[in-house]
Image (cartoon, rainbow over all chains, first blue to last red; front, side, top):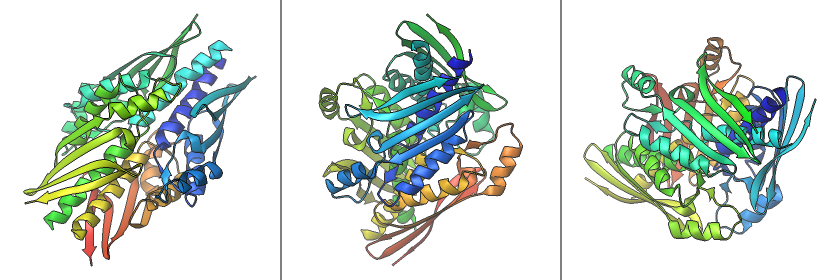
Length: 112
Length: 112
Length: 112
Length: 112
């Protein structure tokens, strides 16, 4: 069924995005270029209409203030992500958000 | 809907698996331990009942014979993977297989 | 110079190891298989005599107790690693250890 | 010794760079943003003065022409990389280049 396939495709993009880029060295200076690279690389994948990535600068700045280092590593707590999939006329919107300190991947809407 | 969520979860596991481990140094000697680690690490993820990973030894052996190196990097052409998801009584079976030289992630069955 | 090359090789192994596997889903149950896979995969790399990886079970158990999830992601705080390089008769021993909450890669000894 | 440490640091950057980003979905359209993100993220690491990454567009275009897909995955054959380390007055220049179809990380110069 097309709806099932569309949701499966949406999941692939989220898993790919997170596990490709988690661990990348990250600072306030390099956040812009990482956002663009994540968006454009995942948009290459099939049926992916758009990817929007926002590194949470306030969370990142707070994490860096607590440490002696000038950078940290990308993890889910610094990320807000929206991915839109289009598969055979079905649009799936998904989002990543923090819940109880864990990055949760959420299926937001499935529309025909 | 539960079916949509189940398929979304299945996609997450496949994207995670592939992009976490692609690029890992791989030889005939280290194939066993990599298979087990991929299976057990992805099985940690929510709603994941089982992961079965088989490194295709014949494809790997052929690739190593063509080269001067004793190892290569994990890519999709060396992998056969099955992932089974269980979400709210729905079972989703997914598989990765090669098609035209590309690793294709396939939604095999969705059952209630 | 051989000493320089030996130290360069040692650094490559550490960077590879960390950035290949950071982010891997990790639990007390899957720690064994991940340790073996990291060791055997990095030992494939040239001039790498041995890799020893120990997931710190006490640190991992404490992290899991603080959370509602049954697994977490591999980061440096869970790892103790020793890598031994042999290059043209030179032995380089390196170690990863935590310092001020950051994983530090340390050149321990260089011997001819 | 500072020279040893400088060469060790150079190796770390190369291993990190390669194993963080290998496997990233890549097309001619997304090559620019990936180059910038790799450069800026690795430049965050200690003692790293500069990172220059060039995706080989001709090699990438040829690989895409041979396939039915509009993108591929980042591997060493698409990359030319130079990393410059500065550690306690010592400058180390390293390069990644292809040799016999394998990405080779090369220590180019060590200067005080």
